[in-house]
Amino acid sequence: MNYNQNRKIAQITPETLIIGVDIAKFKHVARAQDFRGIEFGSPCYFENTKEGFHYFLDWICQLKQKHEMHQVIVGMEPTGHYWFNLAHILKEKGIKFVAVNPLHVKKTKELDDNSPTKNDVKDARVIAQLVKDGRYAEPTIPQGVYAELRVAKKLRDLLTVDQQIVQGQVHNWIDRYFPE
Image (cartoon, rainbow, N blue to C red; front, side, top):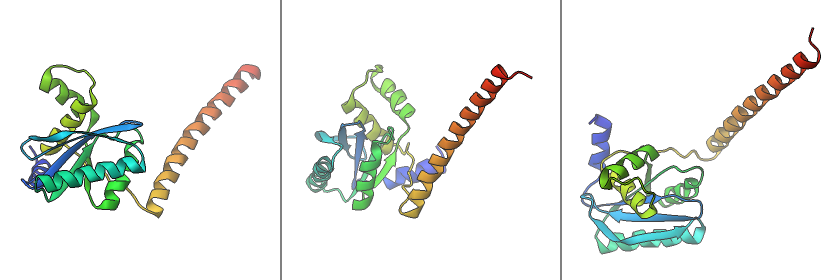
């Protein structure tokens, strides 16, 4: 274990509610547990909509009150772009969120029950376990002009690749039809 992982584990205290969320296109699944891995309540299914996020936040508040937790950390797989909306809501509400590596989720799931089967509830639990063990990264979500710069750079990179492809096609056509 390295220093960073120890620092991450130290952030998980007995008063920390750990939530693992399996991200999907339409409907997410969340599981909650404490620092020892004891699960709280039943899974929370919520949609990738504003109403779904409010339902999820209410579920978190109920669990915090019921189990006398003071901190919350939400872990999720950064699946495509579907996790951005949830991340923005959590950041807006001041709730710490982290990302776990999808490969770690797959390997840990196989370790736990010797079955690679896909199950959203099981994935959410595994994500929460990885957060508990400090196996996560803290993503930075840029705001304002920095977010715009990130999008602009991504678009520039995509356009550069497209330009190279078109240039290659033009050179190919010239060589085929005008061999000199």
